[in-house]
Each structure stands twice: as structure tokens, then as C-alpha cells.
Length: 281
Image (cartoon, rainbow, N blue to C red; front, side):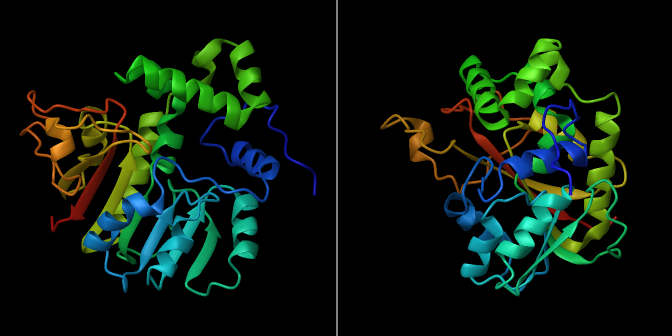
């Protein structure tokens, strides 16, 4: 089998890019945004341990393994990269509660309608479709977070990022013109696969102004509850209103699906947890 190369300028939605990336990161694991310890209260609250769960964009993260240790019994993990799926099958071959399939989230026709009780997307799949370049350029993130993301990309993607930058800075990281349609297909598939009353849990750094429009696309009927948690390692200012507020306290949204103007986001680089309950049409 020929070794995939990261020197090619693949799009983030292409299997070839992630095959190359996971080949070069063989044996390691990486959890996007938050580890299971931070997400455990939300997962335990909204997803019963007996649920049939779909983990989209599983990558080489350990969250599914941690969930099994916490009592979860049926987790189907999918990823666009056949290489990482084979790696994870070998790594978790002793864990019968975990299954792994290579699959594109934009076409999950392998599964029948209403096959799952819950779908978990720890930010990776959604970010893959919308792309890092578009997020850094178009979202109103703090300059600190933009710099941190750029540093992360240099460290994590190495020479591949240098190839992109030499060809046109961050513009080369932008997705193709069908990015919005790809996101539409993914959400449509997630909605199709969930049973009525099922939960789609999306963990992302996209605030409601850029996530709610995608979630509330035609054909979907969600009851959305929003939670906001600071990034790992963030220290709240003692006595601030944010530090006194429990992360398990839902954040109210306006009728337009936005954060209220008076809402104070102490950590401007917080992560957003969207709990989307599938309602009857």
C-alpha cells in the first residue's frame, strides 16, 4: 500500500487528505475541543447509556472508549478516512461495544431511517465541512483565538499547511463553493437517521449566529438547547457573573436563535454545545 502524502493540497472534505494526515499521525490520538471529562455531564444528562449512538467524524479520539468505560454499550463510529478506521478497529478490537465504519457523513445511506437514538458530533465533522480557513476569516472570533488556531494548524498539519500558505495564505484553506450544500447534506442525513425524540449533540466553537441557520434548515424540526463551556484551561475571574453561573445552566436564545445582547461571554473562545432534540414534523 502506497503511503498517502500530505504534500497534496486536498480539501478538508476529501478522504485523501485525512488518510494522509492519519497515516503520519499513526499511533497517536487527539480529542477536538474538549475531553470526555468535560463533556461527561452533558452526555450523561441527555444520552442514556443504553442508547444506540452514532459518533460522526470519530477520528482517533478516545471519547468513544471513555464512554464505554462510563457504561455506554453501543457506539457506531464513522469517519471519512479508511486509514483511521482501520487503525481504530485494531486499537479497539477488544472493545465489543465499539464498531467502526468508513463513511462520508454527507451520504450515510448504509443506515436505515431512524436507526439511532443519538448522534454525537464533537465539532470535527462540522468544522471539516465548513473548513478552518472560512472560520478564521469569516467568524467574529477573538484575534487571540485566530492566532491560537493558526499556531495549532502549523503544529498539527506541519508541512501540509506550509504548502497551502505558500499558495495563497489562509485563502487556500477555504472550502470549495459547495461547502454550504455539504453542510446541508450532513444535517439532512443526521435528521434522517435519528429516531423521533432522538438527540443530536453538536460540540463546536461556532456561535448561534453561524450554527443555528445550518441546524434549522428546511426539513428539520429541532428543539435546540444551548450550553456554553469555556475552553480547556480557561480560568474564570473570581466573582464574575460568568464564574457564578453553572455550565449546566442552559443559555437562553432570542426568537431569532441568537445570544441575548446582554449575555456576557467571559471566555470569548468558549465552546458551544447544541442539544438538538428531533421533534415530530
